[in-house]
Image (tube, rainbow, N blue to C red; front, side, top):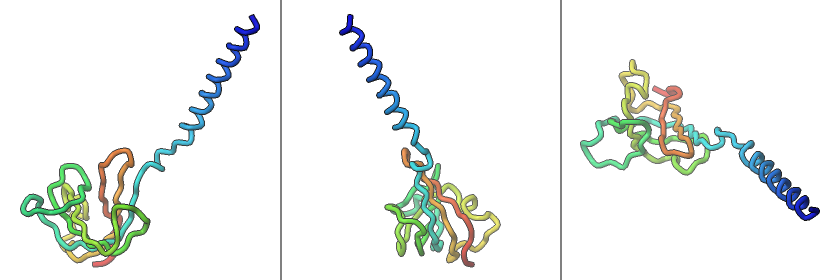
Length: 134
């Protein structure tokens, strides 16, 4: 009889410890910590329709149709993806949606960009935060 009670106490203790451990493990899970957000200043060098020539692209949105070549002037936070003094062709759906659609002159203008991705997937989203220079 005493042996059965000891087994019950041990089993309950083990389950209780497992419950506490799993709560601690998952309770501190902040979804924002798993996201990647990169802010950088860049100068637009070219906008072209994708498919006309071979390009190395960085897909930054759904249904990409245009390549936006950006010279990276500076990066505001350290990351593994965007480095200063490089040119990157971002594949985007629409430059008119990315930039203010009333903008006529986009080439050679500098912008503050934000590149965002949830770390568990690789759907990158490029957005323009504001225009830096004309």
